[in-house]
Length: 259
Image (cartoon, rainbow, N blue to C red; front, side, top):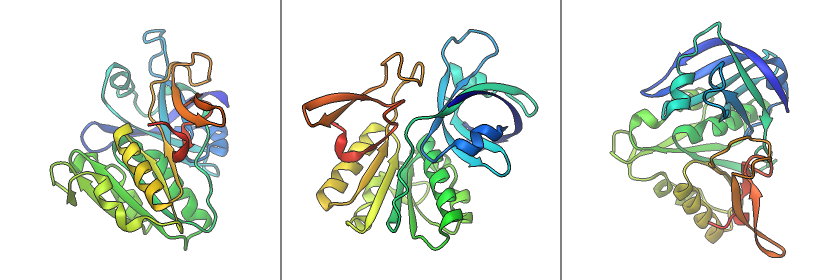
């Protein structure tokens, strides 16, 4: 983990309120692993005081670039949306525990909206290392506009199964409606998204003896384990306990988490 001053190589306006920033950050790109995140200062001033956490969407070590993808949803992301190519941003990372490598397992990725970036990072990294590995993507959102990175997944040769609440793309319903045929002990699920979705995925995985890891979404003030604000209830050998999403996670084995 280290602090970086990264120049924005490219700003990409995506569907609806989604944006991404490609950063010139060689040290970050070389060290980052899928599932990790960065804490970004969204202003050059102390207002807002706290950094904002963003999952890494891409990291290309040889090219020295990293990309974050975000949804404009509040004051912090609205300020980040003002950043243009050539600007410099201040960030700290990579932070957190990444997804496991899972050699030999057939991979099922389940997510939606801003839960998709770390899953895409995982898929792209795995495709480079093992082009023949079977990967399935189940993505959900309120509308088709929330199915970010659909085209990027397909360019990797990965079959994408979409679900939308309003039926504007794919299955009309929630993404977990699509999960049943992909369950089983020979597969492994990696999921990132809102807590109700993660809870449902975790329960389905447990009933079918499917290995499962989840990347939890928690509010973070520091990202370093100092403020203790991102505590996640978990099981331990001594009964219920807490672990921190920023340092012990954000990736947890699903059976650890007390939903």
